[in-house]
Length: 149
Image 1 (cartoon, rainbow, N blue to C red):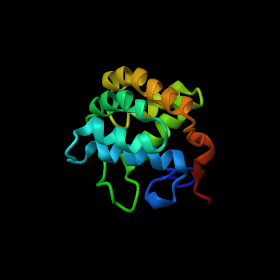
Image 2: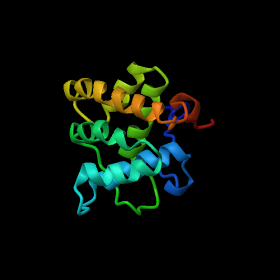
Image 3: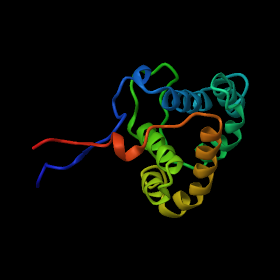
Image 4: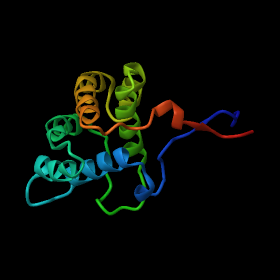
């Protein structure tokens, strides 16, 4: 089996504090949503998103995260990005930059095909809300790196 050209997933295993601002905001909001905070999932995410000026994005984040059954979100203070968190960040980035097919492909890592297809509209809504609020994630394909031979 060849080992050349296999993608090294962007963000995967990266220090979560070292992420760009928009990616860090989205990751923190998703992790707050998954934590057992006293305000409830959507309010916990909205509190984090309010720091970035996009608190209304929580209305799109909540149904999206609920629709992804295999999404594993780490604890809020976890130092590194998990595989499914990386796929979520890349999917939002792809949707923000107009690549719905790539976004759908990335959602397939987090949900079965029919569920991922249904979640695409939620993902696009979240991506647009973040973009309108000035939180633009880096282009997904520009961050992809490949292992050297």
